[in-house]
Length: 288
Image 1 (cartoon, rainbow, N blue to C red):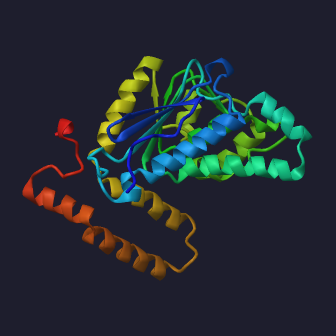
Image 2: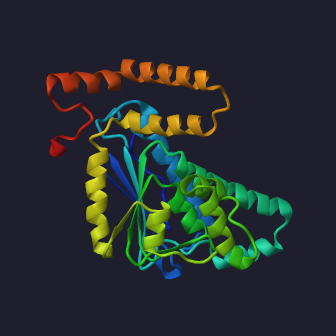
Image 3: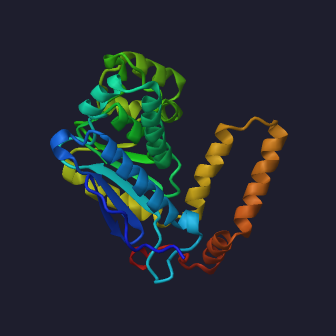
């Protein structure tokens, strides 16, 4: 039986679990939380570990010891900046690597971004300062991003003569074709106003201290939603993204999907609690 005990040991990413909420913080402040191989590996491991211990994956609210499985994942960065992108030493080493070695590095990055994009929890970003290159990729993979007013985001790879290819699918899905193309070509930093307008982020707050309050309020809102519904919403969206059948087949798929959800334990609990005028079993007592 999967349990919430013994999270992976890490050095460059801190882990703080509070009930059904897991806070992951990039903790390489002296390097502006730049992504090196160790940090990437730790994040990949933590995304896998938390995903496996989510309500959406387990289908249960608690483990065998009564400890809540995870429903919300919060990603942040220590210090002045969220993430300055790839570590300069890692980028320098890439120039001397073989084609196969660079392919392996790219596969590691793909696991990082896809692990966050497809994570079964509701993922929240609390970002400040810069989010460049891979840092912008992390932002694009989150479900809801709250940023301070001083934030600067860039698909900065073009300044180095390369392209945001690995992060590209995720940024493209968040921003759309024209905006992704422009920012990839431009490769310059956009401010909070433009990030909000283009859909890179969802909310702007004035001070770093305000991030925690905004994250807490949003987390509480998410905890009032059926946790399996949150996970299945991502799966439903992925089906829409890659749908290649006819319109009639799509309509039938949504009918089957709806029937499945209504007949599930969570769907029955949600409908029953509404009719009985009580709180559903997934809503924490302190929020009632």
